[in-house]
Structures are given as C-alpha cells and as structure tokens.
Image 1: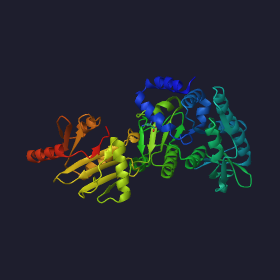
Image 2: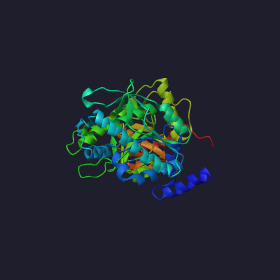
Image 3: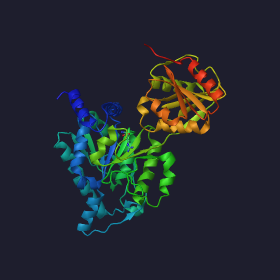
Image 4: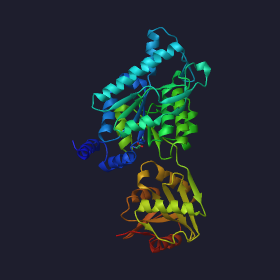
Length: 436
Ligand code: ARG
C-alpha cells in the first residue's frame, strides 16, 4: 500500500479517540527525527501477560513510520525460573543480587524473553532485530550485588543503523565489563542509560498497571517534577517501587532536552497516550521553569521574537523592544512568553504566546499562573477570532466585546480606571504584521 494512504487510513482509525488535527500534530512531532522518537521499556510482566497488545501497538507505530527503540526486562520470569531450579535469590535496593549461577539463568531468560518479542514482531512483518550483547559497557560498582553492571557507555551506533534501515531494535538488559565479563543490568537503569544517549522525544514505560496510581487507585494523569515531586515522595501510599522509578525518572528528565517527557502506560493504551493531548497513562514532565526579566539582553530578544512570531504566525515590528517599560516572562524551554507593559498605571498584557508544538502540555497554564502571581490587576485584548478567548473568559473577571477585539481584565473595580484601560487597549497599534 502507498505509504501516505496507509497513514491516512490509520489516522481515520485513531480519530475515533480524538480529533484528526490532534493526531497529526503528534505524528508530525514524533516524525521530526527518525532516530529520536522514543525509547520504550517493556516490563517483564507485559511479555508474559500482554504480548498480543504490545505487538499490535508496536505494529501500529511501525505502520505510521515511527521506529522506537525497545528495551525489555524479564524479572518475573527470571524469579519463576530461579524458584523452579531452587536457586536462592534476593534483592538489595530493588536490584537483584546476581551470583554466577543467577547470572547464567538470567542471561538465558533474557534471551528467551527477547526472542518472544522479536519473533512476535517479525510475524507481523516488522524487521525486529534482537540485541542481546555489545550494547552496554558496564562497571561493577557494588561488589555485594555480584554480577550487576552499572552502564558507563552505550553503543548507540548499532541501534541507529537498525532504525535508519527501517528496523526496530529489541534490546536485552545484558552488559559486559571491559574484561569481557557479562553482567545483569536493572531494566529501568538500562532504559535510562539508553535514553541519556539517544535523547528521545519520549521515554515510555509499559507496565501491566499502566501508570502511577493515587491513594484511591486512580491513575495520576500528569506529574510535574518541579511542582509535585517532593510531595509525592513523602506520601505513604506511594509504593516503594514507584518511588524508585520516580526518582530515576527525575534524574533522567534532568539530563534530556526539556521538551522530552516520560509516559507510563499499558500496551493497550500506548497509542492513545502518544497521539492525544489528554493521553491515557501517567505523563511525567520536568515542569516549567519560568523566568521574569525587566531588561532583556539580545539573546532573549531573539528568543522572545521567535516565540511571538511562531505563535502568532506573523512578523514582529522592528522597534518592539525599544520601549523600556516592559516585563518579559520566558519559559526555560524557550517555547512560551508573556510580555507585560506598564505605559498605563495598570499592567497591560501585551502578548501571551505559546508556540503550537508546546500546546497541550500545561505550559500555557504554568505561564499564566506565574504572571498572575505578580499582578493583582491586569488587562489585555485578543482578536475576536482567537481560539484562546474561551480560556480568557474563564480566567478573567470581566470582558467587553468589540468588532475586532475582545478586552479582558482582572481585579479592576473602579469604572473610570476600567474605561481608561479599555480605551488604551483598543487604541494600541498592531505589533505583529501578517504577510497577506
Ligand atoms: N500525547 C502527549 C504525549 O505523549 C500527551 C500525553 C498526555 N498524557 C497524560 N497521561 N496526561 O506527550
């Protein structure tokens, strides 16, 4: 089938769960770099109990041309096998103590689990490539754990070649030390090491539970490390395994690009999680750092200009930055900005811009809350055709509609003050120029 027809068919299929526009947005985002789409960790229990959904979700990604890097675990199967063979085993801080005997069984189980995934994918016509050695260079850091490796280097070249040739690499958590000793690596740690090397847009953990649950066993939809981390780590109800995972995710988010994110979901919901704004699972983001500047330097001028021009799809007038009485809020990811001007006694929100690809992440809300903390009174205007007006109507204390503009305000009670503000807002010259 022609590839674009195929894509269209699939988008139609997916549209049952969301708007086509939303799906295309994510498809474009994830297709922008062949190699950096996603690292997906498949939990051991998923291979045992949910292989069918796993394979059909991955086949779907493959159909739309997305090539994830798969890393898998095998813990539950390994424990089962060790028990069968009456080999004792134990864990220290979530890591399996690995004697020579345990290591041998681990390697054979990892290979078996790996081949379950690869053969299932191959039977769907996907060029899955098993990688069970030569990917992770390791150190043995803690001798008490036995043959347990800490990753010091990943060979991402092999992985990249496989992906660029249209295949899907399926990687087992087995490493080797520089003197050739094979070692067992914790599956999550192997995933994080790979993600640090590949810097993917998404890191996805597929588990049976499909997310992080709150105290009443409801899925937590979004976790913002900056705002929620301390709070969650102090909760008694959060399972220690989840705490460990969250801790590692935090470390990971610190070392990958700020617009990358981690999702925890189950195979059945993977594509909903990926291709809709609302998702289906737990999305973990680094959170938004927002800085406020009174006087901005040339570099920030360039940043704000490109945010405004991209968000409003027009060109900013040349002398926009000449007037001094302005405050600039800029997100650390350089994808959103608010400009406040103080020509009037009351703060005037001159621009509120979030670039298109950053919408649906809560960035706009974060910018808004930051700005509103500094201003008890503020007013602004927006073109009557602007889709953001519904949001403005929700957050404002009042608004007035004119032909071209809607004027909104917060905290202004005095009628004279309000009239002045409205007059000012209506009279402002346009500062974004549209080509046609
Ligand atoms: N599809 C987007 C992503 O993969 C948003 C997912 C939102 N998910 C959630 N559980 N809140 O990044």
